[in-house]
Image (cartoon, rainbow, N blue to C red):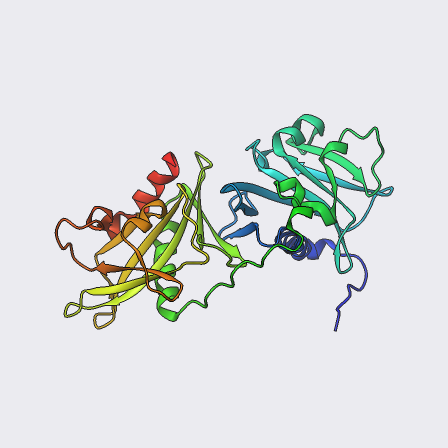
Length: 326
């Protein structure tokens, strides 16, 4: 059963219509790229609507989505507050929201170029930028180089749609356990206390990174994979499993491993923060498609993993520091 929109979106429905346009854009990017573009959505609204992780070269693209649900004289008219696009490297994706999809033409432009080409003015003393583009753009349009048919949206993010025809499907993610969700929630809670960090979750979950952390000052992104294992004072060791098919090492990707003391209903005071590029130095293949290594709740001496053990209370500061340097 296909639902249709009865009439145009109203002013009272602006927030919902923007969300619809964003999700349709994320779906287009994921479908057209066959998962080579992996979308992360923010857990709090702090000026970036999504991160697009290009897996082919490990680059993160910061995206703001803008839309209209009606045309004015056959064109999409956009008005953008100047203080909402202060980062020139953010990519603006704009288009028309139509019944059941996105209009035939999309605008994909870095904020710096948008500000250079748009018309500056003000609204009640607040600076704004305005512009318009048609679904059938003229050859003399100043926006022509930034316009793309919606069926080729992924090409503007560095992915060749033609080159992915017949490409193998990405491995399906594993379902998270309740214990894994508990660990992720703990990491998110701790990082959310850092005012300089913005957190993003994947849509859908396709790769090693399951939490992307944007440093709001440096605009750098750190990717985290979070593992949680059962330990106790009587059994302080547990095996950490990593799905081999979806594992991709990167200088910007790190593993966080937490130990859950089930008999005490709390997390171990120590955790691991491991660069993904170092994992293969101590992990081994279990013969069933996984890499595995042992987590020790307490330091065990001069082992390869001890250098990556930190106090759980330090995690927020350590991740913030990574966002300044990676």
